[in-house]
Image 1 (tube, rainbow, N blue to C red):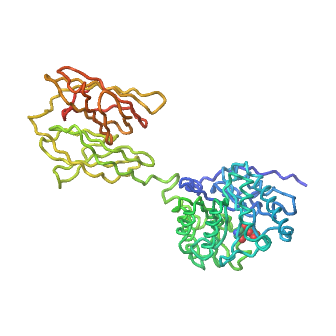
Image 2 (image 1 turned 45 degrees about the horizontal axis):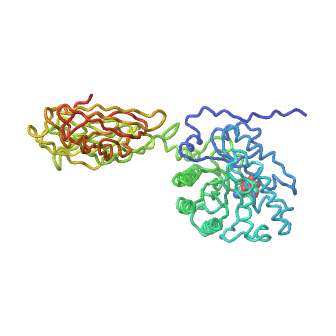
Image 3 (image 1 turned 120 degrees about the vertical axis):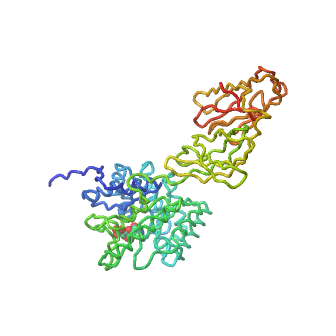
Length: 556
Ligand code: 9MR
């Protein structure tokens, strides 16, 4: 007999016009998976190429079931299961184990056992099968029990139920947790995708199990749909009500069959159903992802079970993608082309600007910075003239949350708003407006500088702390009493109270320092040194403008 060469496990992705499903799914924080048939996975190039390149998750279609792993009492065989895990590992895919306890595909030797022998067999099977992969990082989850309900939402009167009663469910989960303390443990069923009597029975069971402390982490919604029966109602809402119980949810066995022959209208309906399921999962944070039950019509359980039906999968029997593939792809991709989706979320609305250092011709503004999932790149400062009315126009585009406006008219009211921008060009809503009236020209503190500030920041190496020192000098010709120094700290910097030699306060990025009794009067030419410790989120820039009593200081 000729030796058979094992096919290599890693399969290079084809040159694709657009990124694979797994790229887009990962960008959305979801898995997209397939059910693996071990035959073509071993030796069919087209199958292997798609399996490796399009999916980042896999469930063994049959290879981990009881009849495959323990065909006779205590005799375990893992060839198919290991094959699926090895291919997944080589192609950076996570594995969902399916399934430990089911009424189907369980050998007859189990079905005839007495209650105590059946419970022991179940415990041994779970310990051995789940235990085999407990330390394997690829295997992240298990269907512990499968299809425990009948179609009306009553307990299925399987041999498990008839022999052990409903307690077999809780026992199975506890045995699974003991066998693999890290795996996510799921209960899985069909016809529970929408809100109906069966899904409500599932909901009540999961809630009760969790209330009883049974380790149910996840609920699987199989998703064996058929276009002739209509799309299930309220799929997203159903996923959300389970998520509210604290479990992860997932679509585990998605396929959407049709009555043959296939035609383009049926393909279009099928594509819509696939898109609807993917969108429902995308809309629910607790939905981990979607597994398609196979991927090519060449290998599908449907024609064997539903006479005259088929074409349920996104690739046809020749491995050509169908409209269903495009629908899944575009739902995951949101139509943006190859690579991760663009950032379409604007930064949060910045805080209302705080005015300080108002003079007859200028004002310092600072505000609570915006946040953004990717990063704020800058702000627009908008100004309108007058206490009301007028038009807001951009007067500055600082990169941090402060701005000094100048060239204003004395004794005039202005209103300022700010809005934030990110690198993708998203713009936040404008903040509320602050109203500022410039001081009268001539009298009072004029624009000529009568103070000088030397500001020094000393970052602490390797941490987010710094020390700032300020030397304030009265450069006027008479004593300066009860001075208040005002300036805007760069975005991301905060004073750590109390500071020293002054009473420091911070609102947004606006900072004021008021003197203590001993330095409240600075004679002409006199100085005082004040300072504070602070924290920063990366930038250790210095303030650029300082005022005392509304007059700008010279900065050295
Ligand atoms: O797709 C599986 C098929 O190859 C098997 O012959 C069949 C045996 O019952 O199981 C199929 O997978 C089922 C899955 O394990 C549980 N949910 C329903 C799936 C379709 O029948």
